Amino acid sequence: MTGADIVVKSLVDHGVDVLFAYPGGCSMPMHQALTRFGDSIRTILPRHEQGGGFAAQGYARATGRVGVVMATSGPGATNLVTAIADAKLDSIPMVCLTAQVPTKAIGSDAFQETPMVEVCRGITKHHYLVTSIDELPRVMKEAFHVAASGRPGPVLVDLPKDVQLSDVTQVDLDPPMDLPGYEPMPPAVPAETIRQITAAIKLARRPIIYSGGGVILGNASEELREFINKTGIPTVTTIMGIGSVPPDNEHSLDWLGMHGAAYANYAVRDCDLLIALGVRFDDRVTGKVEAFAKDAKIIHIDIDGSELNKNKEAHIPVRGDVKQALTELNKTVTRCDIDPWRKHCTELKEKYPFSYDTEFDGILQQHAIRTLSDITAEMNPQVTVGVGQHQMWAAQFFKFRRPRTWHSSSGLGTMGFGLPAAMGIQAALPGSLVIDIDGDGSFQMNIQELATCFCEELPVKVFLLNNQHLGMVVQWEDRFMDRNRAHTYLGPISHEEASGNSTAERFTYADKRYPNFVEIAKGYGCGAATIRKKSDLEGAIREMIEHKGPYLLDIEVPYQEHVLPMIPGGMTVDDMIMQ
Image (cartoon, rainbow, N blue to C red; front, side):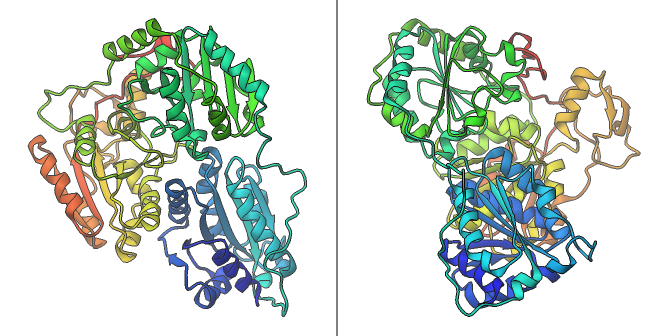
């Protein structure tokens, strides 16, 4: 077997059924090996390596399995960097295979050479430069183990061309791993710690559960729901935790943070016990960190010990598997005697709901998303988003009832994430309705993946909220920079909104639309339509869903709408902007 054969055989043995790979000179041996050993692997050709990286993420986010992407050396490999960094911050299991120039040429500035291990050292969970074919089986086995175990993350395997081309007559494809010091799973949470947590819950009069992405990544959503129902404790989630708690649960306070529910933020401000599960106290949640839950005792359970006391000091820090911890807690907890607190949280929810102007005769972004949510409620949709205002509105107005159905670039906030991530989810779940709720700024960053959707028969639906601006940056200009426009208009520079002070009123539309997304989508072979009238929205959504292939629905929306509520960066809940 050649080194390339070993790589592909290892993918097969690890159950990889979908691979996103863009070929080049140094990765050709692995692509050739796929034709010999990869009959059970569907190899999807993205139109940009970053698209392939985000597609692998979509696959991993939706299934919980390791996503795999492959790129050639040099620019092919560096095009994966953003997707790798994104996976690191959101703890997504990925194996990233990059080709490298031959070992003798490494360090000589050879054609299409980049030192990928050095480039990615700070944005991977682990990384390898393979210099001998004898190392390959062990490295591949370790890569999948490290990516998927403990706190998941991306692993880079850099493969010089000569290692791919060399061969061996005898090879052990299942060698022992050599990972000294790596402890993927912490020991079980001790019974004494469970008793301490249970006692703290009994003593609390204003407890809040604060659930993060670790609950979903740890497949602990069912245990969390049981914990909530047994205790009756009001619960907030992070953006990454959306879907772990059904929005119609009587104890759900939805999600908190900069653009989260006012009632969630107020409840955390007022609580006396904060039970933090699989969270990292991110700055977009805490704002001014010393003022976050300042009167609360904090219990923090996380599989990654480095997160404990990193951003916020916990009174009971627990390194442990959240699923195991919740399983044990569910044996000991009972319903909390906190009726006044529950009543207070219910009143907060009634007083400060997510809202928008329902009387506006055009299509507001919030209305479009709520309508889409209502129409697809029984269709079990998978939803991806780009980054910006539409991302926040999707989190606010789309109802996610199950884990692993909401897919957002949360830690890195990468524009261009939505379409390729949806592509990967569609490949993983061929029978599912997969919708990318996107903005025109984010969408154009990976618009070329429409070609992949058409050519690979991936019927992704793009729900494009087109306001012709970088809406979130416009919002900040409006709120904090005297409405001075600085390169946030996405049309020709001759337009009056391209620069300078803006006098536009709320519900203003860009008077000229650029580019023509419908023609572009049709040029790629996709179905497409554009609408502006509110009365056309429901019918257009149904037409999009019923279309057999990929489809783009271009919805003209105003650009002066703001995402509210809003806690300015570094501020506190008491500084929240409500209108």
